[in-house]
Length: 85
Image (cartoon, rainbow, N blue to C red):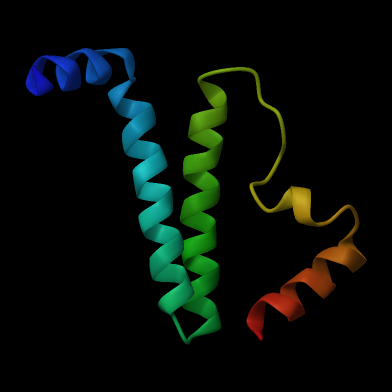
């Protein structure tokens, strides 16, 4: 019964969407473990690319996955400083 239930649930979820979501979570975990700022920036860039791919499957909602945190370049600088602490 569990197997049938899992098969039904899996058939309702798009495997590509599930992969992208899981991969973004994994990359975010790895980014948070990094000590080098360049590595963090690289992980953020990969996450941003996956976010873009995810958006292109539907109507795009925003330009950058980090954009909701800042509404101006000045706010983004503040966010970046806080994030490195």
